[in-house]
Amino acid sequence: MTKKLYYEDAYLTSFHTYVKETGMDDRGTYAVLEETAFYPTGGGQPYDTGTLNGTTVVDVEEIDGEIRHYLAEALPLEDTSVHGVVDEQRRNDHRQQHSGQHIVSAIFHDDYQIPTTSFHLGDDTVTIDLDTPQLSEAVMKEAEAKINKVIRAGYPIDTKWVTVEEADAYPLRKSLSVEGDVRLVIIPEIDYSGCGGTHPSSTAEVAMVKFLGWTKNKGQVRLEFVCGDRVLKQLEDKHQIIQGVKQLISRPEAELVNEVKSLIQTDKSKDKQIAELEEELLFYEASELAAAHRADKIIVNVYKNRSIKALQSLAHAVLKQTSDHRVVFVSEQEDQLQFVIARGESLDGNMNAVAKQVMPLIEGKGGGRPHFVQGGGQNLISGEAFAEKVKEQLLSPAE
Image 1 (tube, rainbow, N blue to C red):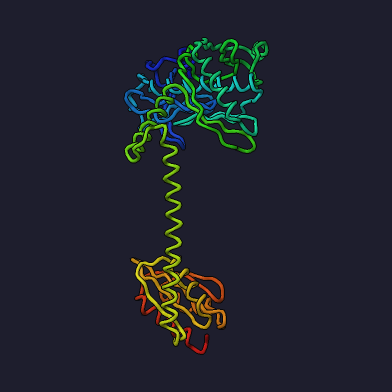
Image 2: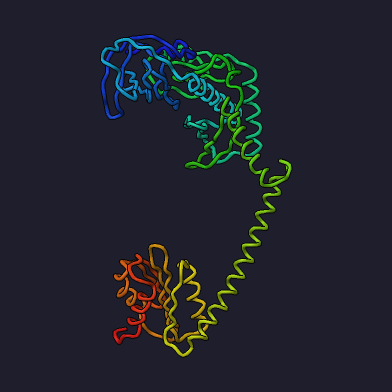
């Protein structure tokens, strides 16, 4: 068994040891050491990263009772001893987040009778699932204040190995599901939990906790938060966003929300006006087409870069004004043709059958109802040629 130095000293980030074995599995090349300060993935906490003799450690996992250090490349065969360096910033971040989670879960458990059912320490935020259908803003605000009060008080964080029987003497937040010796993380008067993660020596090192919000997840609440240096990063990120918005909107920060709401409302009003004007223009365009082709059986038009939605709207608008015409609208685009084929309600004929005859010309696909179909394909022939082929099908006796 590899000696786990991270349990003896959670602050240790540099060590010398010997290589026990090397190998390769589906995760990649790995080395097993006689002792290690690298924490392997476990208990919701991610693995440490760093280097062994300068080679990057990309993952650390405990598999079949041995701790495997996965490397960016294999260690030279002559490297029987190694100098390990753990990424101190990542280790410190994990200590802060994991200990913060203990305090958050303890406060919700003890003060609100809401137990934690799962924990995930992500790259940017921490989440816990709480066994409750919802959290009120009042509870969120109150709980966050209590948690930060505990952190500022600087309670010691102790760890000790005990038997399961000895652990039963402590007011454990969650019952143990292991046999043999268990490692307890103890924040006196606050939290007593079985845990294999790394923790600082005092709650003061967690610095602070900030809730970011919650979502529903399988009937429970998934609470998202950050601790310690991640709070400062969140503050910096949000500050940069606000500064960017202030460059676009010249208003004090306190007025930005109302100003953005006003701009959105104005934008919606303008969108509504534009939609009304577009509908009016469409009506006039349809009227002109219907009038210009009153003596024709088929109204054919080819457009450049007109969307399929615009073709559909125009076809509907035309057929509202005439019930005894067919329309063929084609849009030529950079690498495709799109089309609409439709008929007035006083006419017979299956437009799907017509489309089926002409779609091979453009290797296209499409469909719709018997009186109105749309589709598209590759730009293999001109829009005019394609429209002419459609017209031929509409006029043929087989229609």
